[in-house]
Length: 403
View 1 (spheres, rainbow, N blue to C red):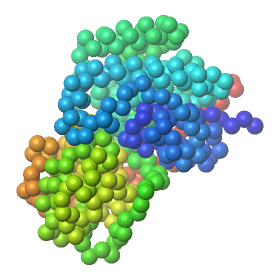
View 2 (view 1 turned 120 degrees about the vertical axis):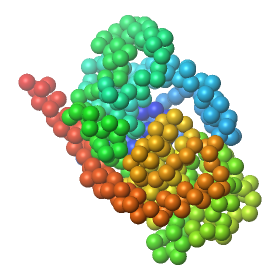
View 3 (view 1 turned 30 degrees about the vertical axis):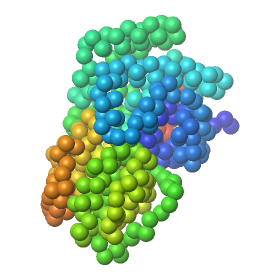
View 4 (view 1 turned 90 degrees about the vertical axis):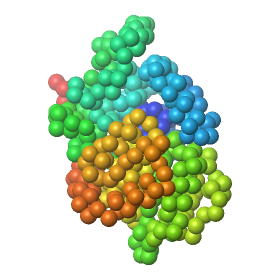
C-alpha cells in the first residue's frame, strides 16, 4: 500500500527549521513518507529525522554570512528593510519553480509550510493540495499581523508581482492578502499563554508549544546539576552574534562572580580574541544548548523564539538583549509576562548586565511565573500533539475524497 506523502516546505534558517524537526521525525515514525526540500546547510539535520531530503538552491544571497560584526549586519538589514517583503516574494517564486521540478512525478498528499515559506502555499494552491501553516514565531490573524508595518505602496507592488506570476502559472484563489489567510489548521510552536493576544485565536490555531528534537553538536560540555556554582548560559543565536564588545563586557561583568558561565560566541568570533578567559567561564564557538539548559539558572539571550521557548521549557529565567525587530517583540513579551528582563543593545554595559542578572536571579515571584509558563509548555503537547492534528486532518480529507 502506498504511503501517504507529506512535504515539509521551509526557508533556510535555523529558527524556522529547528521547530519542525521533531514533528517530521514523529510523522516518519508513524509511517508517513515525508520529503523535505533543504539547502546544503540543513541537509544533515533534516536527514536525522528520517525524512527524504530534496536538495534545492535558495535564491536569497547569503550576504549575512559575509559580515563580521553585528553592526555591519544591522546596517545591511536596515538598508534592505524596505526591500525585504519583495525579496521574500521573489524567493518564494524561485523556490516554487524548483518544487515543480522536485515533485513533478510524485505530488504530495499534504503540504506543511512555514509561515514565511510562501512557496509552499503557492505550490499547494497550484495543485489543489491541502496545506498546514506552521508558525515558528507568533501566529497571525486579523488581530495580530506582520503586514501592519508594510506600506500600501509596497503591498500594491507585491500584489502586482504576485498577480502576474499567478496568471502565468495558472494559480487561482491566492491573492496577495490570501497568502496570509489562516489555513484550516495552523500550528504554532509556543503555548497560547505566550502568544500575542492569544485569547483572540480561534479553533483553527493549535498552540503546541516548542517542538524540541534531538540536535547534534561537535562536543558535549561537563555541566551537571552537582556543580558548586549556578550555571549562566550566554548566547546570541546563529546570525546576530559577531559582537566582541558584548562578550568582553560579559567577561568583565562576571569574572569575579559565583556564576559558572557558559558562553557561545558564534563562528566568527574566536574565544582567544577576547583576552584572558576567567576560570569560571567556558567559551566556545558553539555550545550544546539543549544539554546545558536543564542545568542552567539564568540565560542571557538574543530572544530568538527557539532559544526563548527552549529556556522556558526548562524553567530558566531570561535576560533578553534583542538584535532585530522580531526579537524586540519577544524581549518585551518576556518583560510583560514577568519572565525576565530586557534591554536594547545600546543600553548594554557591565553594570547593566550585573544589575539585571542579580535582580532576575533573586526574584522568587519571577521564578514562579517562569515555572507556570514551563507548566503551560509541558501541557501544550509539543510534536506529538502537532502530529496528531496533522493525522486528523489527513483522515478527514481522505474521508471526503472517498465520498
